[in-house]
Image (cartoon, rainbow, N blue to C red):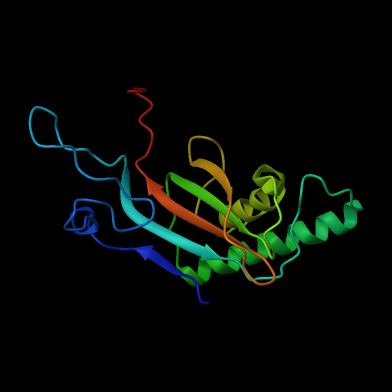
Length: 172
């Protein structure tokens, strides 16, 4: 399956006739009519779904592997994320939310947080590609980790949703 951008439409085109969001990472239904103003998304309407290759070597917080093997896997993950960001033509983003989904090869129970070393290496690859200037808290919200449905050989899916930049003068 080839990676592709999730959305490039205007915010108004994202809502279905029933009033719900039609795409990942978009605002929910608008507020009801009356005294309440309509819901305003706190992000821009651009998102990318990055599907990493199935069967990749991944890093797990519970792994007790030799440092050289961990280094090799980290370098490969960073390189793969860099290539995918360039392939998808993800532009430089000032701020974004990252949802990280591990789709395991089977249906055993897993702890989503254990895959953090993998997600960290992939996000560093996005920094290498120029998607983010840095991966600190002012630019990257996440990764928000979850376990998805089983996928043959297992894979990682990252959804990058552009957010409005933080305003340091108005912290509210």
